[in-house]
Structure formats: C-alpha cells, structure tokens
Length: 372
Image 1: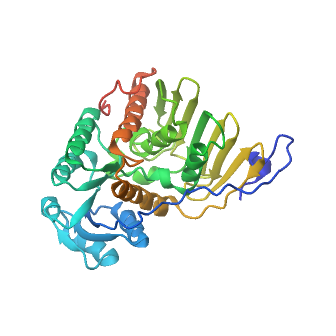
Image 2: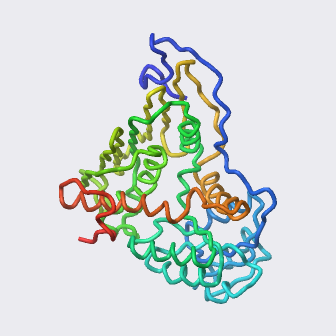
Image 3: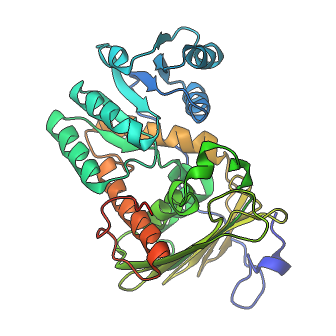
C-alpha cells in the first residue's frame, strides 16, 4: 500500500480522508459473447509466451504456430497448445480456411509483408506494436484492410493493464470531468538490454518502450488532440545500455497538457506513477513497478480506492485480442484499431524527432521513425 504521508494520496480538501466506495467500472477485458475463432500465431519469439499464456487462460483456441525456428515453435506448442500445427512459412498458415484471426509478432520491418499477405488472405489481424515505422505504409495497410473487410488491431496492451484500464474507464465515464493534465513518471532499470539486439536501438526508450505511454496519453486525453510535442533524451551516469535511458516529453493540446518522464537507469528505489487531473476530480496510480499499482480516485463525493485484480501482462495481452474479437463479432472498429494507432505513432515519431533537433514538433509532420 502507498504511504500517504509520502505521497499525499487519499487526502481530501481538508487533509483528512473521506473514503467512499469505488465505482464499479468495466476495467477487465471483455470477451466476445460467442465468437471463438481459430487463431494462428506468426512469430514465436520471446514476447509470444505472454500472448499464448493470456490466450490459454482466456480459453481462446490457437490452432497453428509459425516460426522460422521449428524448435522454438514446437516449444511454444508443447507448453501451451499441444494440438496446434507447426508451420515454417507464414503463407502456409494463411492458406488455412479455418483460421480467421492471426496474431503477427515479428519486428516492424519484417512484419509489413506478413501484414499485407494476411490482409489479402482476408484474415483479421492483431499486430504487435509498434505497428509500423512509416505512417504512409501504415495508412496504405489500413486502406488495404478496409477494402478487404479485414479488422486490424494493434497490441497496445498497456490500455488493458488494470490501473490504466480503470483510469481510462473513469475518464470515459466522466468521473473527473474534462481532462486538464496527465503526468507519467516511470523509474525502472532497463540495463537488461545491454548486449542484446535492443541495445542497438538508439531511441529505444522514447520509441519501443515509450510508445505505450504516448498511446495511453492519447487514450486519456480523449478529445484533446496534441498540437506539438517537445522531447529530450540523455545518457545517464553509470548506465550499461547504449541508448539514452533518460527521456522526457511534453505534449501540448488546446486546453490540456501531458508529460512523460522516463529514467531507465534506476538501480534502487524503482517507482511508477501516473496522475490525471480533470475539471471535476483527479485519479492517480502509484507503485514500485508496472504491475504493483494502487489507484486512487478523487471526486467531490470523496476518495475511492478500487481493489483491482490482474497484471499488465495477463490482462493486457488478453485485452488486446479480446477487443479485436468483440469488434469482429459486433461489426465495429476495435478500440485498439490500426487506424487510430497511427495517431499514437505520429506523436511518438514527433517526440523522437524533437529529441534530436531540440525543438517542438507538430505530430504528423514526421512521417517515418527518425533515424539519425
């Protein structure tokens, strides 16, 4: 639990707690009523373990796994779906008529031709994030999917992390009024990437990691559209990883602001905090990491502390696929649809450009992930 003397969380206007029952909000993933298609997973790298575990626990059927590494695919199959078929070529998996939905996990550059082939095969798609590194390519894929009647979503799993999901639902329900500010501050140790492929990604924190927070900023800001973003990135003293592990971004809207601060070189005292203020209330989340989070909601009625169940990786990966399946069943656009995700990427790309140029950038004017 949070120490209120340190955090100030839970104190009313007079500094005295005024506890009220927490609103019952639908923060957990919502499964489709009856739609249970056969799913194919393309790409069996490290993150696929989280996908398959979430799908298994949700009762979804994964009928086939594809990887260029047979041993890796067989390992995933044996652990999660022993009856699933194995493919070494994604085109063979896409040729199966019984598979209606595919989860595509390879890195963005490798993923584009697979996404195009899946669209042409008229499979509904969950794409790993970041969706694309070029907005024009992303728009072309979205148009191609529309022409084929394909639903395409992006695995922005942070939206269904219990604390973020509850905050998102509280804002959508109008419990805090019109959003004025959102502040994210993430302190963790990202030096584990040293010596890995991620160590070569110069803008790793703002891009591959930070895209979750740019996406959440847009989800929480709702109707407030970013007009410009200013960002910076620096190497920190004593870090082992090559990319800068200190980064920050300020997002300006017409009548709201959001700020994101990252310190990926926090060796002791890790902390993750989110605080949102609206015209009629506020909501915050605080914890030692992305999983252990306490949420506190402040309104005129008092202070509410919902007891949330679940974790980012379990509910997050369940939620992205569940939302796609519900959208297919209900004939609508997924909340995590690829079209809307291009706005999150536009904000992320603008922040990366800003960090290199040292000036504010208008989102959408940078069409491709900057490479310097």
